Length: 424
Ligand SMILES: *Cc1c(COP(=O)(O)O)cnc(C)c1O
Figure 1 (spheres, rainbow, N blue to C red):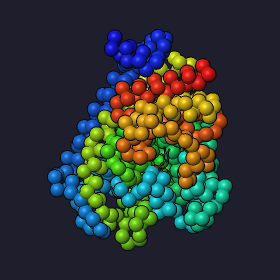
Figure 2: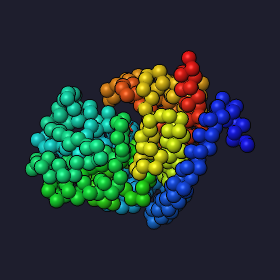
Figure 3: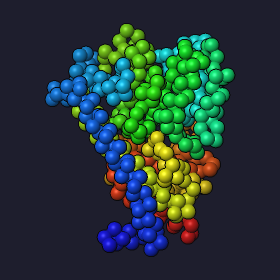
Figure 4: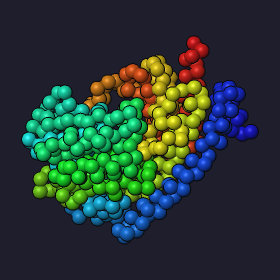
């Protein structure tokens, strides 16, 4: 068999080749469902593009202030439509997902008010934005915004704890959909919706914001469609479809998005400026392709979860557990194993495949992070990539890949590197 031959060339044992094929069989039905959903979502994206009258003229760019850039304005409207929200900002000028989230927070909070997170520790880079444990320069804490968090329970959100946790000065309630760098399940849009209902009932003055990173287009609905006032994320993750060269987005109510826009640019200017430099084409085309790429990345994650478990690794989520992000975690147990795993993923990338990933403390992160990704867009994690925070229990977070086949090759090479380590 052709695939078998290729896998033997890759140095896989007969047992590993059997696991490879078994994982395909076991996950077949679920992967078909994922493909069907991807097709449904592509129709939804197409409807959004057509409803706003996308035309050749929108693909041209602007420079300077970017006044009246019709492509940029259309992209904002398409995002709003897709999220079923009043407004959106999808911009190159957001340097990352963290930046978009920070604009949402600073735009909508004022000194003396309180932010509450209902999903335990927020993502690493948000700790410095909030000023968690250290009211560092420029943080919300330094500015006089206080913060408290309600930890997740083993089975998910602490729904019954919400009412007594929120207070009259709670202005912003924050929820993180994806697992981040934590060994926990991602939260489904349905679970987020139930939490949002509780918050509304006891704390009607609160603005509800969701960190939507890695979750976009994984389910049929987005958090804005179950009551979230604001969502934010990165365009070099799901919604950029691997074609966006940079950027982030916010979507939500007119008021919340406008307030955030004054932090992206300046009060009074908001979303009216921002040149697109000719990148509108790749942002729009990336969005059009995003459901398909996300679907392939998900198929890859499901297959990888099953294959890695057959190979004896502890995985999260297991292949048939509900998923609402594209991230597949695998417990590796040592920094050496993380390095081997990352080397295997890196060697499967189209760019810089010969490089050896080295860990470093990136701005905003607590621990050293080892990152593998031979990607066309630097740091893009809808392209095949792996991140390993170098801290116990030494987990690799695998995500992205434009095809199931690419994910498979990456995981095969990662597993081969891990077996070489064990045989040493
Ligand atoms: C990726 C991510 C972010 C933001 O990361 P950037 O690298 O700044 O784009 C925030 N929250 C979660 C859960 C993420 O996965």
